[in-house]
Image (tube, rainbow, N blue to C red; front, side, top):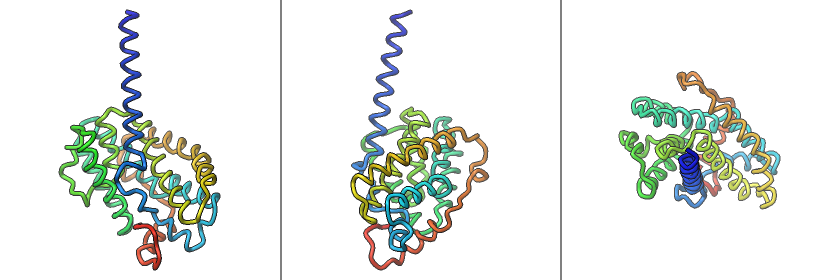
Length: 244
């Protein structure tokens, strides 16, 4: 019995290490989905004077996590991950449709689907999972980033909370990187922002992972109207570095 226990323990450790390594690779800035070219409206917020330093950057991102588009994406992620684990293709596609409908402007749609399509394409070539076939009914313009990541991580047996943490960390890191170029923030302030946002990230993951399996539409909600308007205003911003 001790020998069997030792083998199982070692196997579990190896599987956990592989899962973490894969997740870090998929959520890395080097993963070619073009995340660096998107700011989620932050570029307009900087031009309008709403984000001017590290503290206002942290506040902007916190609002998106607690009450805005990022919160919606986390909810979508949770339901897609669970549907994939359950092998429920119908439910997965229904949530994917809801995810697309939740993108409130042309540029939000561009940001979500461009990254989703790129993520699926690279994942198929480098880390294929049978679960990705559950998304075959979706064209590139119909697949959001959160849905694609949730489906792949579930297909590789990465636990929900770990997958959700990796996903949210990548989203936050990309926004902080955008702020470093736009405000601009120094490298030290960028790392301080990442550090200070950790508690917000962990709290959001805990809340979302505990979300009951009820209708995701009824669970959705957003209260960051200015951020949505900033995404819309960015479409006609005269000088810009970012696509969104």
